[in-house]
Image (tube, rainbow, N blue to C red; front, side, top):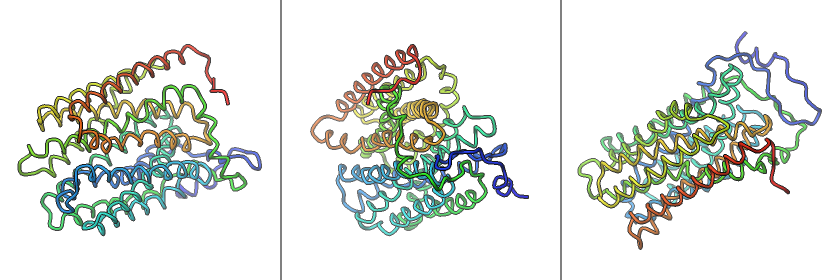
Amino acid sequence: MNENTRIASSPVTPRAERGPAVPAAVPRPGRAWLRAAVPVVAIGWGAQQFTPLLLLYQARLHLSATTVQATFVPYVIGLIPGLMFGGPCSDRFGRRKVMLPTVVLSVLGTVLLIVGANGLGFTLAGRLVSGMASGAGFSCGGAWIKELSASSGDADHGPRRLTVSMGIGFGLGPLVAGVLAQWAPDPTVIAYLPHLLICAAAFACLLTVPETLTPSPGTSFLRNLRLHEVRERRFVTVVLPLAPWVFIAVAVAVGYLPGLVAHQIAGDPLMFSALVVVANAGAGIFVQPLARRLHTPPTPRLLGWALAIVVGGMLVAALAAWLHQPALVLVASLVLGSGYGCCQFYGLTQVQQLASPEHLAGLTATYQAVTYVGMMASYPLAAIGSVVPAPAVLLGVAVLAALTLAWTTRAAAVRAAAPSGASLPA
């Protein structure tokens, strides 16, 4: 009897006739979460493979720096519906039924990027579709990894495993694409082909991952969109202000800084961009053990360290912009990547503590939607930087991060001393 057959025949927790989708009785699946992580890696790969090619597109299509940064905007626009519908849909219909078409959507995004190599319209469409896939995949995949981790007695590892899975995709995608774009023939085609292969592997993995939710056909889909957890004071006063800094740290490092020092890079500008992305994503992965040690609830210790690292990274970024030093850009990318990893770990941990089982993917999606607002940061920074010196712009961002640090740590300390479960008034 195979794994899926055992799950289908397992007893299911009783529920009301029209109640929400409920967790399936999943046997201890050991490392089944790894198979659920492969699609997350594939979708993350598809999301970031485009980034090191920005300089290539700028030269080939004769784009301004501001227009190049604008390619992040359709990605975020696509993310919002992907997150807001992908998460609740997976809470309503089950994880696999959402992840399978999401991987197909990620493939479509890459196909559009290949077709759009010589035209901005298809490129923007590809970024939009990639954003939709990322939104649905990260919200549903995050919930699935958490549930599979919990079923094997490792519930506390869920946020770290999701952050690492996303980071691997965010790092390997740009690295492979950057290497191929630098040295392979027809770079705007060849650079994207590995993503199609990893998506095929992800699709195969999805067919064997245990389902963790039993669909509830009698439940209205609108019920899954009503997330009472978003009114929790901790979510409003701590999680939401923190969330944009998760990807502001990424956008500044990989989208904004390389363009400031491009004229100082001789020989391999695409490889330098890829290296910056890999350094940023790698730091986000390798900082996870430290983030776990710093996480000492109910104190906001990790929260304070996470935003302090972001502030430090912005200061290094400002120095790199002032001195036009590629080496300092790499240092800033490492520091900001560490800030990204700590912020993401803390934010996902808070979301998974606040969410009820039937709203886990939905609340994760809401949080992720706010985090990805930060991914658009490089566009306004480039626009402002055309009239204000880049070092001054980055110092201003550092000040905003410091203010967020002061606000959120104070709010978290107050919440730690208050009774649990308090919500904002309607």
